[in-house]
Image (cartoon, rainbow, N blue to C red):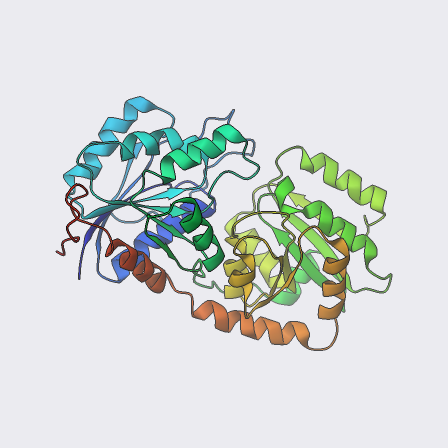
Length: 386
């Protein structure tokens, strides 16, 4: 059954996991036959609010046909035009992502519009990482106004069901992106100065405190002197970690084992890092999910992750899970994986698991959740088909 949908959220030319995931969702919905209008920002974050090097990279995700850049979440003057473009499509439902308080004022305003169609929120984060009371309140104000909630794992769905009883909740693991051809592995390793027999453990993504890179450094200090592991931390650093983490590595005496590459990693460099890596490490202290895990697995790179949020479910079949905040457990897992053919076997299983997690299935899971919503929010009648 074909339905008409409006998806509002970041996309081209913005970068980051939310833009990539929202773009993939639109593509998936269109692949399974739905009509989708995609409304994206003209501007997203002012410079004072985004501590990184900027939130734009035209190569980060494709610009889809029919995309309309119409809103700015922190500029209320743009909101009526965005709502008007959404309404004129006469959609059966709207879909919005939730991940940060910065978009919350717009979402609250939009969800309070009279006569709007049923709206599902794709919950990437139930609240900002490390959120205080006001930011948690902002998240709650959005999510309790949504007609349905969709998230990325069974444990995350259970948490939403407990917090928002009576609201329909669906879930599906984040899909794996289409694997792109990787550069020559030996050339990629040579470019990083890796010697024969050395293994590369790669941390990839925004470098923030909740992601536990300091725990990874402490684990590196516990590895034996003859350990083959070399560690590369690659990504844009926030919260002053571009200064504090190298200092910590020096105090721990792991400067020869650990390298840092701070800054946004563009597509070509990303592929070179994946080609060189033997393992992706996600040593998170807390969190809900990671777009890095399905990316790595799609390219046949196994994942060592901590048991937080939906990560254990996400890496099942292509990864190993250890407790969060435990450098000893992280070091022990690295040492085990360096032995025998464990990494090679895990890499093969990672590809197999990733192949089962498609955007079409993800879109189908969201469409199934929308089937549970009324067409007329005031009457409770079932959603109409087109």
